[in-house]
Length: 262
Ligand SMILES: Nc1nc2c(ncn2[C@@H]2O[C@H](COP(=O)(O)OP(=O)(O)OP(=O)(O)O)[C@@H](O)[C@H]2O)c(=O)[nH]1
Ligand SMILES: [Mg+2]
Picture 1 (tube, helix red, strand yellow):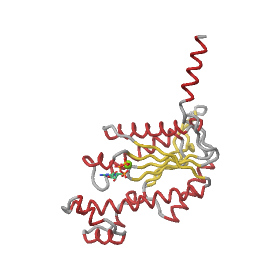
Picture 2 (tube, protein in one colour):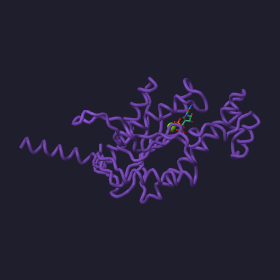
Picture 3 (tube, helix red, strand yellow):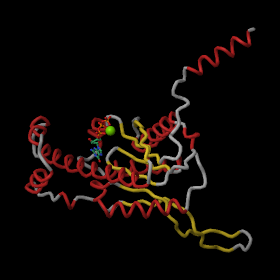
Picture 4 (cartoon, protein in one colour):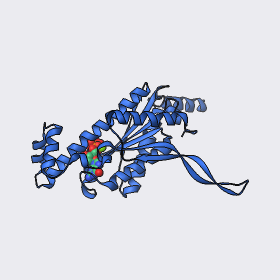
């Protein structure tokens, strides 16, 4: 009698874990996108504006940790966001939505916090794509957004650093287009097109093959072995050239799939 009550309670309570059964739709490409929480405020004190190479390096380290843990196909980071691409065959965490979101967000938060010595959080969301073409569109979309935000950031901080208040600058830039911002920067001696590419186009992480020094225990000889390594690209192309870059990198990942799932 007592046992039954306990079983009833157990199944009753588990039924109330409403979202636990949700899984990533089978056969779809998945992107996990993470974004720093309130980073506008967090970056105010300790980082150069609008961009800081140390901040970018901590974001890259965080993206690397996610690529390793989730066994991602391709990773991309810009500003305070990270996208990790997972293939349709991905079987990590039984494709559980809750686990993928919560574990990716907690890994990003802990990795970045250890990098900067302060507790920060990331949110995490899922994007699903039906085809490789969808995936290419996704990454072109994020890159376009990154370029737009970089121009806005440069325009905003250039005016602020010239002595104007936040209110004044917001009013001056409200409703202005890219040409206006480019010209304004030019009058302040800044050519936006000469700013580092990682600021405008983001940084990519992908899997490539590299020869590494190894040791053959049978012959006791040093040998060169082909290993899969994580490569970083800070000089990404844009638009159609980026599409071609992605296609090439993703085809390589498909032909050399990662052997494990988290
Ligand atoms: N100083 C500095 N700030 C940066 C750098 N990269 C990103 N940021 C900041 O990160 C912010 C990211 O924008 P959002 O994600 O829209 O803003 P948020 O404050 O994080 O807001 P939520 O994501 O909604 O929580 C930018 O507005 C910048 O203030 C950097 O290299 N240097
Ligand atoms: Mg943010």
